[in-house]
Length: 307
Ligand SMILES: *[C@@H]1O[C@H](CO)[C@@H](O)[C@H](O)[C@H]1NC(C)=O
Ligand SMILES: *[C@@H]1O[C@H](CO)[C@@H](O)[C@H](O)[C@H]1NC(C)=O
Ligand SMILES: *[C@@H]1O[C@H](CO)[C@@H](O)[C@H](O)[C@H]1NC(C)=O
Ligand SMILES: *[C@@H]1O[C@H](CO)[C@@H](O)[C@H](O)[C@H]1NC(C)=O
Ligand SMILES: *[C@@H]1O[C@H](CO)[C@@H](O)[C@H](O)[C@H]1NC(C)=O
Ligand SMILES: *[C@@H]1O[C@H](CO)[C@@H](O)[C@H](O)[C@H]1NC(C)=O
Ligand SMILES: *[C@@H]1O[C@H](CO)[C@@H](O)[C@H](O)[C@H]1NC(C)=O
Image (cartoon, rainbow, N blue to C red; front, side):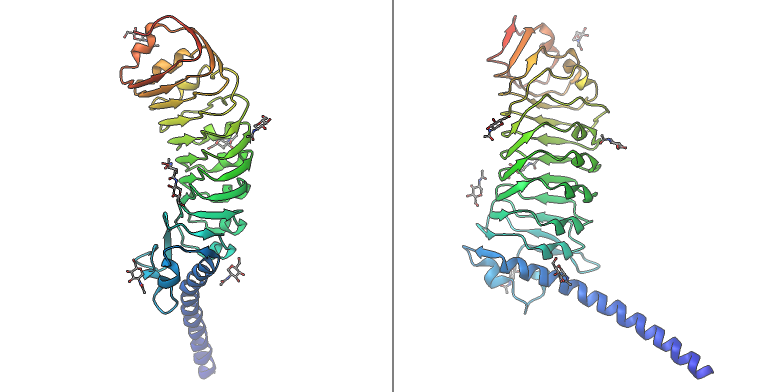
């Protein structure tokens, strides 16, 4: 009796130890095999950096561009900037469950973003700018609920901005400039209260600027230049954006007057409305923007003088 109890208790303890240690072993090995798969997906590595450095005979946490957490020793960041890498992202990256930063700026990664990346629930920063990714901006990005920055600038993304991006309630930086994105700017974007910087410049966006339905107390910079936006600037937009310092709407097809709520943005430094179809009297109110350093209003139908 006693012996049976003792041995089953030992068995349970043994099972527990075995499963936790094999889980740990698996985990860093999972990170390693995902990174080796990434290395295998690189078709060209001009400086032979990953080829020589990412070797299974040295610990993953010491590999070039790889950072690990100090406690759990799992990979938390991949930083591969400007190495001229040509290749694709393997689905295996979705297994790197502790990954918080995925930064591959200034390379030549191409193809679609693998849906498996949606498993990276700890991911905070996606920095993919200046690569050659194509396809639509995936709707699964909404699963990355901890995301703080999404920079997909200067790629070949097409199609519309998914409405569901608005569910990324911690997003601070949204940069999609320099793609071929079309369709409307979803109103959900202006429902993200943590938003700091939104840059949709140089795309093919149409429709009008969506209204702002809640206070965006962090919002500092809006850049929608070089699109096909029409309609008026929403009247009460700036009632909700007290911290706005940069408003760049130049080179669109925007009409109507400057809403007077704009003059509430006391920190405004950079205001670009140039090359639109705007009209109205430019009252001395522009002079209320006492921090203003740059003002582009040419190529419109404004009347009056700026003092
Ligand atoms: C790989 O790169 C890291 C960071 O530059 C360096 O510390 C390490 O010694 C390199 N390892 C090998 C095997 O080249
Ligand atoms: C990791 O992901 C790939 C593809 O998504 C999968 O085939 C593989 O079995 C996963 N697991 C491990 C432990 O590598
Ligand atoms: C984009 O990345 C390439 C390297 O892949 C680099 O030569 C180029 O200067 C980068 N462009 C910009 C605008 O930073
Ligand atoms: C997004 O990436 C571009 C190109 O690398 C860079 O110039 C820009 O500063 C980034 N945007 C933000 C808000 O970090
Ligand atoms: C706006 O945000 C609120 C709370 O953050 C959320 O409940 C609501 O579903 C969002 N609406 C849209 C249209 O994104
Ligand atoms: C931009 O969108 C318009 C329709 O809104 C379309 O006719 C045009 O071909 C698009 N241009 C590019 C460069 O995608
Ligand atoms: C602009 O400044 C003047 C003088 O300080 C003030 O009376 C007026 O209310 C201000 N206008 C706005 C729209 O804030």
